[in-house]
Length: 257
Length: 88
Image (cartoon, rainbow over all chains, first blue to last red; front, side, top):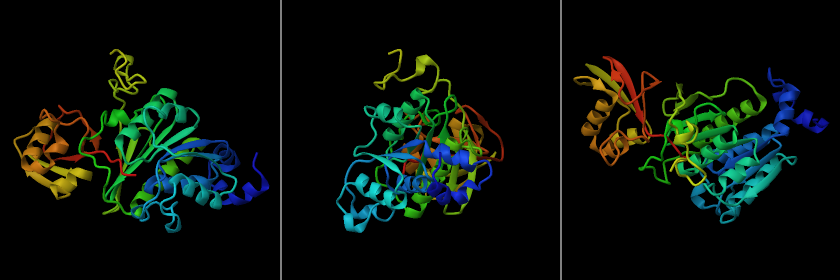
């Protein structure tokens, strides 16, 4: 049930055809886990807070640094050196005081992914390391949770969604690219665009609105402003969602090994 | 046969160009990946694994459709080669 205050705040998005008060109530009742609240995840978190998602779980280790500030919009210069999750929570509460926030001052690993994912209705993967994204994917697939992955590199971005039974992230790439480096070229506007698009996907999945990217990957080159949707296929040999013999167990080993 | 190859993400950065059209004798996607790795050795570590096989961690599309590594490439095809992104 939405309060008068909520009906006023969300009036303009409630006008969206197919969304309405029922869609707003779905957002209010939802919990979204966000892996890292940096350039991509910070923008995603901000948009979900603004849209009225009821609870956000923010997972990100460490304290902010000066070179975060070109993209991590939930951080501030005045609080450099302080925990990222605390700064993010304060900024999000300024925007939406109704928002419930759970702070997890650690990054996603295969050890904590399952417990954190289990408490969420949807998970958003915004980490700068493939190992974290794949750990989120594996837990989401195992627990049947919707999963949104949004990422960027240089002037390019990719966004995709995973629903139970559909192609997952490991179907697209079963292992981490060996040459990926933790540090990469990034404008905040490009990371923010990836996060905002991921937030749109999350809203669509939670409110059952539009056509999510559950069998597509959005690939955009913001250098040329070209956008396209590439098909994705489920891999029956996928270690996460494939046939039982090929699946990873909770220790990251093949189920039959 | 002619094929246009579009490079994205780290592959584009390594190769240094966004796309190129080459003449080649034809073959499968795996054959083309080896051709590109030979032509642009700076991108070989992104395209091939340590055993010299096409890397499972790279993504390739033929005319914007996902393609198996043994898919034959037709004359005039446009092939996209990229590594996935994890920038957050």
